[in-house]
Image (tube, rainbow, N blue to C red; front, side, top):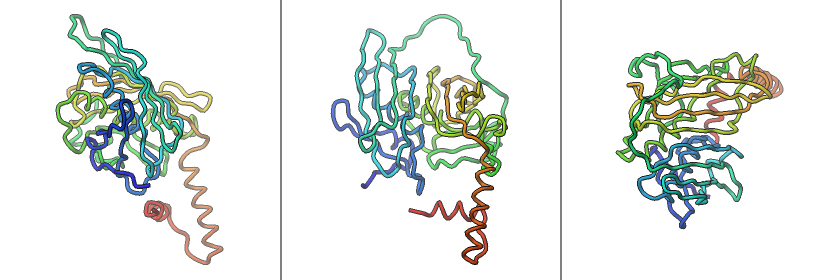
Length: 301
Protein backbone atom coordinates (compact mmCIF):
# COMPACT_ATOMS: atom_id res chain seq x y z
CA UNK A 1 0.00 0.00 0.00
CA UNK A 2 1.36 3.40 -1.02
CA UNK A 3 1.65 5.73 1.99
CA UNK A 4 2.18 9.46 1.65
CA UNK A 5 5.26 10.56 3.59
CA UNK A 6 6.03 13.88 5.27
CA UNK A 7 9.49 15.45 5.23
CA UNK A 8 8.75 18.19 7.78
CA UNK A 9 6.75 18.53 10.99
CA UNK A 10 4.18 20.95 9.56
CA UNK A 11 3.28 18.53 6.77
CA UNK A 12 3.10 15.63 9.24
CA UNK A 13 0.52 17.56 11.29
CA UNK A 14 -1.62 18.43 8.26
CA UNK A 15 -4.43 15.86 8.02
CA UNK A 16 -6.81 14.88 5.24
CA UNK A 17 -10.44 15.16 6.28
CA UNK A 18 -12.21 12.07 4.95
CA UNK A 19 -15.56 12.63 6.68
CA UNK A 20 -17.07 14.80 9.43
CA UNK A 21 -15.12 13.08 12.23
CA UNK A 22 -12.75 10.91 10.21
CA UNK A 23 -9.22 11.89 9.17
CA UNK A 24 -6.19 10.37 7.47
CA UNK A 25 -2.60 11.22 8.43
CA UNK A 26 0.67 10.82 6.59
CA UNK A 27 3.72 9.20 8.15
CA UNK A 28 7.11 10.75 8.72
CA UNK A 29 9.82 9.90 6.22
CA UNK A 30 12.16 7.93 8.47
CA UNK A 31 13.69 5.82 5.72
CA UNK A 32 13.85 2.11 6.61
CA UNK A 33 12.36 2.53 10.11
CA UNK A 34 9.39 0.14 10.26
CA UNK A 35 7.53 1.38 13.34
CA UNK A 36 5.93 4.76 13.99
CA UNK A 37 7.26 7.21 16.54
CA UNK A 38 4.67 7.50 19.31
CA UNK A 39 4.77 11.29 19.38
CA UNK A 40 3.55 11.35 15.78
CA UNK A 41 0.33 9.50 16.53
CA UNK A 42 -0.37 11.52 19.68
CA UNK A 43 0.12 14.82 17.85
CA UNK A 44 -2.05 13.75 14.92
CA UNK A 45 -4.83 12.63 17.29
CA UNK A 46 -4.73 16.07 18.90
CA UNK A 47 -5.02 17.83 15.53
CA UNK A 48 -7.93 15.58 14.53
CA UNK A 49 -9.77 16.30 17.79
CA UNK A 50 -9.20 20.06 17.39
CA UNK A 51 -10.80 19.98 13.93
CA UNK A 52 -14.12 19.02 15.57
CA UNK A 53 -14.05 21.75 18.25
CA UNK A 54 -15.39 25.28 17.87
CA UNK A 55 -12.88 28.00 17.08
CA UNK A 56 -11.17 29.60 20.06
CA UNK A 57 -10.83 26.44 22.15
CA UNK A 58 -7.36 25.00 22.59
CA UNK A 59 -6.26 21.66 24.07
CA UNK A 60 -5.18 21.91 27.71
CA UNK A 61 -4.48 18.18 28.27
CA UNK A 62 -4.54 14.72 26.77
CA UNK A 63 -4.14 11.19 28.06
CA UNK A 64 -3.21 8.44 25.64
CA UNK A 65 -2.63 4.68 25.62
CA UNK A 66 -0.27 2.95 23.21
CA UNK A 67 -2.07 -0.30 22.36
CA UNK A 68 -0.13 -1.66 19.38
CA UNK A 69 3.02 -0.73 17.50
CA UNK A 70 2.25 1.53 14.55
CA UNK A 71 3.56 0.46 11.13
CA UNK A 72 5.28 2.97 8.85
CA UNK A 73 4.00 1.24 5.69
CA UNK A 74 0.31 1.74 6.59
CA UNK A 75 -1.75 4.96 6.71
CA UNK A 76 -3.08 6.14 10.07
CA UNK A 77 -6.84 6.67 10.23
CA UNK A 78 -8.09 8.93 13.03
CA UNK A 79 -11.64 8.56 14.32
CA UNK A 80 -13.06 11.25 16.64
CA UNK A 81 -15.97 10.88 19.09
CA UNK A 82 -17.51 14.15 20.32
CA UNK A 83 -17.99 13.30 23.99
CA UNK A 84 -19.17 16.72 25.18
CA UNK A 85 -19.31 20.42 24.34
CA UNK A 86 -19.95 22.68 27.34
CA UNK A 87 -19.86 26.43 27.79
CA UNK A 88 -16.10 26.51 28.37
CA UNK A 89 -14.79 22.99 27.75
CA UNK A 90 -15.01 20.37 24.99
CA UNK A 91 -14.06 16.71 25.45
CA UNK A 92 -13.06 14.34 22.67
CA UNK A 93 -12.07 10.69 22.34
CA UNK A 94 -9.80 9.82 19.40
CA UNK A 95 -8.54 6.46 18.20
CA UNK A 96 -5.75 5.94 15.68
CA UNK A 97 -6.40 2.88 13.51
CA UNK A 98 -4.24 0.84 11.14
CA UNK A 99 -5.47 -2.20 9.23
CA UNK A 100 -8.70 -2.23 11.24
CA UNK A 101 -6.97 -2.27 14.66
CA UNK A 102 -6.61 0.52 17.21
CA UNK A 103 -2.95 1.40 17.81
CA UNK A 104 -3.50 4.44 20.07
CA UNK A 105 -6.42 5.75 22.11
CA UNK A 106 -6.62 9.32 23.42
CA UNK A 107 -8.98 11.40 25.51
CA UNK A 108 -8.39 15.14 25.31
CA UNK A 109 -10.00 18.29 26.62
CA UNK A 110 -10.21 21.79 25.13
CA UNK A 111 -10.88 25.08 26.87
CA UNK A 112 -11.95 28.54 25.80
CA UNK A 113 -9.01 30.18 27.52
CA UNK A 114 -9.27 33.58 29.18
CA UNK A 115 -6.96 35.83 31.13
CA UNK A 116 -7.39 35.66 34.90
CA UNK A 117 -5.71 37.51 37.73
CA UNK A 118 -3.65 35.64 40.26
CA UNK A 119 -0.22 34.22 40.86
CA UNK A 120 1.71 31.58 38.93
CA UNK A 121 3.15 28.47 40.59
CA UNK A 122 5.79 26.44 38.76
CA UNK A 123 7.68 23.59 40.40
CA UNK A 124 7.90 21.41 37.30
CA UNK A 125 11.27 19.74 36.54
CA UNK A 126 13.95 22.32 35.83
CA UNK A 127 17.73 22.03 35.68
CA UNK A 128 20.57 24.36 34.76
CA UNK A 129 21.82 23.42 31.30
CA UNK A 130 24.14 24.88 28.65
CA UNK A 131 22.55 26.75 25.76
CA UNK A 132 21.72 24.65 22.66
CA UNK A 133 24.37 26.38 20.54
CA UNK A 134 27.12 24.88 22.73
CA UNK A 135 25.48 21.47 23.20
CA UNK A 136 26.46 18.49 21.06
CA UNK A 137 24.20 17.31 18.27
CA UNK A 138 22.28 14.07 18.64
CA UNK A 139 19.03 12.35 17.82
CA UNK A 140 17.75 10.24 14.96
CA UNK A 141 14.61 12.13 13.89
CA UNK A 142 15.06 13.91 10.50
CA UNK A 143 12.15 16.27 11.25
CA UNK A 144 13.90 17.72 14.32
CA UNK A 145 17.11 19.42 15.30
CA UNK A 146 18.35 17.83 18.51
CA UNK A 147 21.07 18.80 20.98
CA UNK A 148 21.60 16.29 23.81
CA UNK A 149 22.37 17.76 27.24
CA UNK A 150 22.83 14.26 28.69
CA UNK A 151 24.44 11.62 26.45
CA UNK A 152 23.14 8.67 24.48
CA UNK A 153 25.32 5.57 24.15
CA UNK A 154 23.34 2.79 22.52
CA UNK A 155 25.94 0.12 23.20
CA UNK A 156 25.84 0.89 26.92
CA UNK A 157 22.07 1.20 27.02
CA UNK A 158 22.27 4.89 27.97
CA UNK A 159 19.76 7.37 26.52
CA UNK A 160 19.28 11.08 26.98
CA UNK A 161 16.87 12.37 29.61
CA UNK A 162 17.47 16.06 28.86
CA UNK A 163 17.56 17.46 25.36
CA UNK A 164 17.15 20.69 23.41
CA UNK A 165 14.93 20.11 20.40
CA UNK A 166 13.04 22.10 17.75
CA UNK A 167 11.29 21.65 14.44
CA UNK A 168 13.68 21.98 11.51
CA UNK A 169 11.10 24.03 9.59
CA UNK A 170 8.96 27.04 10.64
CA UNK A 171 5.47 26.24 11.97
CA UNK A 172 3.71 29.59 11.58
CA UNK A 173 1.74 31.37 14.29
CA UNK A 174 -1.20 29.04 15.05
CA UNK A 175 -1.00 28.13 18.78
CA UNK A 176 -2.82 24.85 18.10
CA UNK A 177 -0.08 23.70 15.74
CA UNK A 178 2.59 24.53 18.33
CA UNK A 179 0.74 22.60 21.05
CA UNK A 180 0.46 19.60 18.74
CA UNK A 181 4.15 19.97 17.95
CA UNK A 182 4.93 20.01 21.68
CA UNK A 183 2.98 16.75 21.93
CA UNK A 184 5.29 15.42 19.21
CA UNK A 185 8.40 16.60 21.09
CA UNK A 186 7.15 15.24 24.42
CA UNK A 187 7.98 11.64 23.43
CA UNK A 188 11.69 12.39 22.85
CA UNK A 189 14.07 10.77 25.33
CA UNK A 190 13.23 8.75 28.43
CA UNK A 191 13.22 9.53 32.12
CA UNK A 192 15.05 6.26 32.84
CA UNK A 193 17.73 6.77 30.19
CA UNK A 194 20.48 7.65 32.66
CA UNK A 195 19.58 5.04 35.28
CA UNK A 196 21.48 1.79 35.89
CA UNK A 197 19.68 -0.81 33.76
CA UNK A 198 20.93 -3.53 36.10
CA UNK A 199 18.73 -2.00 38.80
CA UNK A 200 15.56 -1.07 36.88
CA UNK A 201 15.87 -2.93 33.55
CA UNK A 202 16.14 -1.48 30.08
CA UNK A 203 13.47 0.71 28.55
CA UNK A 204 10.71 -1.01 26.59
CA UNK A 205 7.57 0.14 24.76
CA UNK A 206 5.52 3.04 26.08
CA UNK A 207 2.26 2.14 27.80
CA UNK A 208 0.59 5.50 28.34
CA UNK A 209 1.42 9.17 27.95
CA UNK A 210 -0.17 12.31 29.40
CA UNK A 211 0.53 15.97 28.67
CA UNK A 212 -0.83 19.16 30.25
CA UNK A 213 -0.33 22.35 28.23
CA UNK A 214 0.65 25.46 30.17
CA UNK A 215 2.00 28.64 28.57
CA UNK A 216 2.17 28.95 24.78
CA UNK A 217 5.74 28.49 23.52
CA UNK A 218 7.02 27.88 20.01
CA UNK A 219 8.06 24.40 18.90
CA UNK A 220 10.12 25.77 16.00
CA UNK A 221 12.41 27.50 18.49
CA UNK A 222 14.51 25.65 21.06
CA UNK A 223 12.52 23.62 23.60
CA UNK A 224 14.19 21.90 26.55
CA UNK A 225 12.67 18.46 27.22
CA UNK A 226 13.67 17.70 30.82
CA UNK A 227 12.74 14.27 32.20
CA UNK A 228 13.21 12.60 35.58
CA UNK A 229 12.30 9.13 36.88
CA UNK A 230 9.60 8.80 39.53
CA UNK A 231 9.19 5.08 40.23
CA UNK A 232 9.97 1.61 38.89
CA UNK A 233 7.97 -1.43 39.93
CA UNK A 234 6.32 -4.52 38.43
CA UNK A 235 8.31 -4.11 35.20
CA UNK A 236 6.86 -0.62 34.68
CA UNK A 237 8.60 2.71 35.03
CA UNK A 238 6.97 6.14 35.41
CA UNK A 239 8.70 9.44 34.74
CA UNK A 240 7.69 13.09 34.71
CA UNK A 241 8.96 15.96 32.65
CA UNK A 242 8.68 19.51 31.45
CA UNK A 243 8.99 21.34 28.14
CA UNK A 244 10.37 24.89 28.40
CA UNK A 245 11.69 27.49 26.01
CA UNK A 246 15.16 28.95 26.44
CA UNK A 247 13.75 31.75 28.65
CA UNK A 248 12.37 29.09 31.02
CA UNK A 249 8.68 29.57 30.19
CA UNK A 250 6.81 26.33 30.91
CA UNK A 251 5.05 25.12 27.76
CA UNK A 252 3.88 21.72 29.00
CA UNK A 253 4.26 19.09 31.69
CA UNK A 254 4.14 15.37 31.04
CA UNK A 255 3.92 12.00 32.71
CA UNK A 256 4.71 8.74 30.94
CA UNK A 257 4.78 5.05 31.84
CA UNK A 258 6.66 2.41 29.87
CA UNK A 259 7.73 -1.18 30.24
CA UNK A 260 11.06 -2.04 31.83
CA UNK A 261 12.49 -5.18 30.28
CA UNK A 262 14.98 -7.52 31.99
CA UNK A 263 18.67 -6.95 31.37
CA UNK A 264 20.38 -4.08 29.62
CA UNK A 265 20.95 -3.05 26.02
CA UNK A 266 24.56 -4.14 26.42
CA UNK A 267 23.31 -7.67 27.17
CA UNK A 268 21.37 -7.68 23.88
CA UNK A 269 24.40 -6.46 21.95
CA UNK A 270 26.60 -9.15 23.53
CA UNK A 271 24.04 -11.85 22.65
CA UNK A 272 23.74 -10.60 19.05
CA UNK A 273 27.54 -10.56 18.63
CA UNK A 274 27.81 -14.10 20.00
CA UNK A 275 25.16 -15.33 17.53
CA UNK A 276 26.97 -13.53 14.69
CA UNK A 277 30.30 -15.14 15.66
CA UNK A 278 28.70 -18.59 15.66
CA UNK A 279 27.09 -17.99 12.25
CA UNK A 280 30.39 -16.68 10.85
CA UNK A 281 32.24 -19.80 11.95
CA UNK A 282 29.68 -22.02 10.23
CA UNK A 283 29.89 -19.96 7.04
CA UNK A 284 33.69 -19.66 7.08
CA UNK A 285 33.79 -15.85 7.10
CA UNK A 286 34.91 -13.12 9.48
CA UNK A 287 32.20 -12.00 11.91
CA UNK A 288 30.62 -8.58 11.36
CA UNK A 289 30.99 -5.84 13.92
CA UNK A 290 27.94 -4.41 15.69
CA UNK A 291 28.22 -1.24 13.58
CA UNK A 292 28.25 -3.31 10.36
CA UNK A 293 25.20 -5.26 11.51
CA UNK A 294 23.31 -2.03 12.30
CA UNK A 295 24.16 -0.50 8.93
CA UNK A 296 23.01 -3.63 7.12
CA UNK A 297 19.70 -3.56 9.01
CA UNK A 298 19.18 0.09 8.08
CA UNK A 299 19.59 -0.79 4.43
CA UNK A 300 16.88 -3.43 4.34
CA UNK A 301 13.65 -2.48 2.58
